Structures are given as C-alpha cells and as structure tokens.
Image (tube, rainbow, N blue to C red):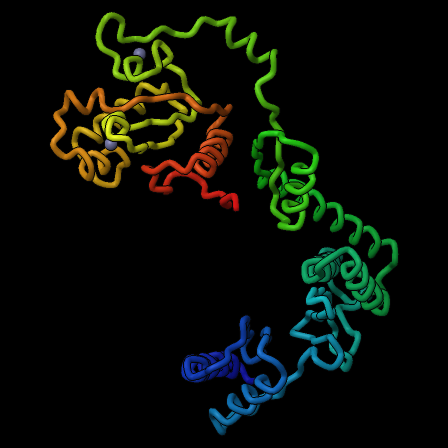
Length: 365
Ligand SMILES: [Zn+2]
Ligand SMILES: [Zn+2]
C-alpha cells in the first residue's frame, strides 16, 4: 500500500482470490464485506471452524498473508473508522473509531485556509461520527471524540457546539421526514385489548413503520346510515340477472363483500362444493365473471376447473343456473376484506378455493 497503483492491484487480487476460494468452502461466513484489502464478516460456525477458514485463506496463495481479529475475546472489533461491539445477547452497536497510534492532527484552526474550509472539515467529521453510530449513546461518544480532536487543534468550543447542534437538528428532521414518508397504515378489525396488545408488540419488535387503525364492527350508526340511502336497484330491470336469480334477490349491486358460491349440481348429488371470494366491485360483476369462467371451463379458475372436472357435459344454460351465491361477510376496504375472506376460508374450508388470492392464515388446530 502507499503506491498509487497498489489499491487497484489489491482489489483485483482479492477479487480473484475470493471467487476461487469462497466457492470451495464448506462453511462460509454469513456476511463478508471488503474495503480494498480490509475484510469484515460474520461467522456463525464456531471458533474452530473460523481458525480453519483463516488457515485455508492464508494457504490459498503464498504471496499474501492475512491477520485476523475477532470479537471472541473482547467483544469488540475495529473495522476502518468504525468500532463494532458485540454483546452476549447477540446485539451489536457501532461507533466512530480512531486508530490508537494515529496522531491527533487535523487541519489546524490557525492555519492559512479560508474559514469555510475549516467549517467544512469540521462538519464532515461530525457527520461521519453520527453516521457510523448505531444509537444515541454511541453517537454521543463518537461526537465527543471528534470534539476533543478539534479542540486539540485549536478550534473554539462554541464553534464546535454550534456545528454539533446543527447536525443533530438536521438528522432528526431527516429522520422524522423519512418516517412520515414510509408510514404504512393498515386497518384491522377490533376484537379485544389482548389482540391489540399482541399485534402492537409484534409491530414494535419488527421495527416496521406500520400504524394500525383499529376498526370496530358494524355499529347502529353505520347501519342507520347505510339504510338511509336506498340501495341502487338491480340494473337488469325486467331482464334476467343471474346474480339475483342465484340467491341475491335485488342485492346484486352490493360491494366490499365476501361471498360464497355453492354448486347446486353437486348439492343435488349430496356433495358440498363451494368457493369463497371477495369483491370491492358490485358483486354481480364478479359473479358474471365466475359464470363465464365456468361456461368456458377456463383453467386456473375455481369454477372453470370445477365444471371441467365434475360437470363436463353441462350446457351453458345449465351452468348459468348451476350455482347459488350468498353474502357472508363485509369490509370497508380491500385490506379488511382480505382479512375477512381469509378468516372465512380458514373457518369454512371451501373445497374450490385454490388459496392463491387470499392471505393464508394459521389454521385452527
Ligand atoms: Zn341483480
Ligand atoms: Zn358441482
């Protein structure tokens, strides 16, 4: 190192070594990162296999010899400008690291450079200290190290404190903005406090940015509101409406519902074959699509495959009246509908669902 050609040569050499060596390994590191010829990794196969790995990588090419440090003895490991600390719980923190032998020298405050250059150097060092730190405690320690370094180089404390304060403010503004941008809202039906506590616990531990709005079931209020507006009548008028005739009797324009379609041809033979689905559109559109799939015996559709498998010779007229439909659930949006649908599928175990479009839920024992 030190020569200008050295880094590209080192990078090329390491790349060739890695591609050959790593593919021959029985036990490999779960994380492997390299900066030129400094490598950091996570090893989960025990100290003996790590030593074996180290001996192998050193024997791989005689012109290069590695040294190794690990967190096994002290729990700490410096990598470039970052100190990694691993705790017995498996958690880890990172913070700014200065090599112990490095002289505490940086652009001196009295040197003949424009003030803007000195401010920029200070700013970039504080930013780096904050960036490599994993939490508030390590961040405070890292910033303190930078502050000491600049004090030793003649910088006034007030200037250091202002820069630290500005960077802290910018960071927290950025964090708030990022959190707001990534916030995901999810509606879940309210069951009881126990469920709320458990779901919130899972979300907290997952560290995802999901906010839950707990929706209560139908109240007298919504019932009054929905009955205050008269339902749009069946648009078929005096003509045939397959949906109304198959059981919905004037309710074929309902949307945001979970429905159940039962095969009456099978029912006549004493078998129960049914399908559960959901629709955010008026249910008559969905039902007509199902009937069309059935008439065409369309593959990969529940009713198309059922007709092909069980009633292959049925005529189109027979198929149009071969099914009955019921509304068995409702939701306010597609998320709530999917949940209701999944619960119904879990509890009623429809025979014709291919379980592709719904969210699989854990089965009841
Ligand atoms: Zn209708
Ligand atoms: Zn059938």
